[in-house]
Amino acid sequence: MEGRKSRENHPECGYAYVRIWQVRVSAAVEVAPSILAADFACLGDAIRAVERGGVSLLHVDVMDGHFVPNISIGVPVVASLRKATRLQLDVHLMIENPEQYIEAFASAGADMISVHQEATPHLDRALAMVREHGCKPGAVINPATPVAMLSEVLGKVDHVLVMSVNPGFGGQAFIPEATEKIRELREIRDRHHYNYRIEVDGGIGPENVAEVVRAGAQILVAGTSIFHTADPAAAVREMAHLASEALAQRV
Ligand code: DX5
Ligand code: ZN
Image (cartoon, rainbow, N blue to C red; front, side, top):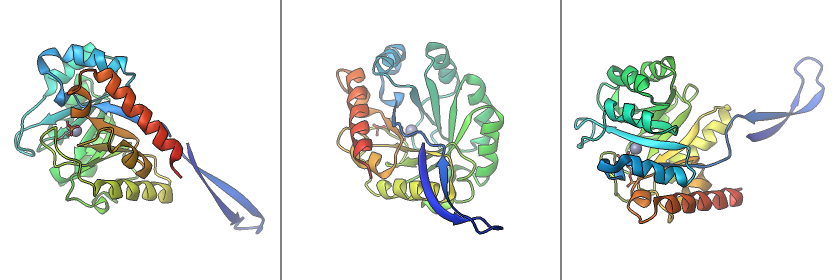
């Protein structure tokens, strides 16, 4: 919960009172391992490892070779993941015509579905479809897209995903301008009493966890820095620890 106090006067009797605005936003920061960086021949093992690390989300990158220059995971893999784990499946659609596939990913077992602002002229419709199919809708922006492009949907989403790399590949370097976008999204949420969580994706690791968490990030997607280590469970725990320390320092 985050709160904000304001001193106000009753509109009719003029009685002065303090109003406490409550914004339903969880203070906890979650690490969402991106299985794009895992060994696809041993996905079950990868999932068990991050479950041991204590995560509750699994980030699933869906790429079509058109919206991004890479092809990755599709509906059947999401259905298999659903059978293999009770973790929440955070499906990140990096595909053209996302509306065409929302129902299939929802039926396959997605819990959260994120749609890129750049991927459809009908973002509002796509987000509504996600909710109609029982999943949490999220809007995503690429590094070149300003937060302002989401102004009309921020009141309708459960999360906003800020890309801190150009989507398509794991293992890229964090683009530092993402931090300011996270801060901006946090300020907009506070000002308008919106409910979305702020997620960041790309180049996240122990070296920049504190920076993005202090800015306001609440879901940290990380692939390489978790699965390309000898002990993914330990990597998750370390990032979660760094996140909670940074949260405690946040003013
Ligand atoms: C990039 C994907 C990311 C990617 C992150 O297009 O959306 O989720 O897996 O990988 P790392 O953490 O290696 O940057
Ligand atoms: Zn992603």
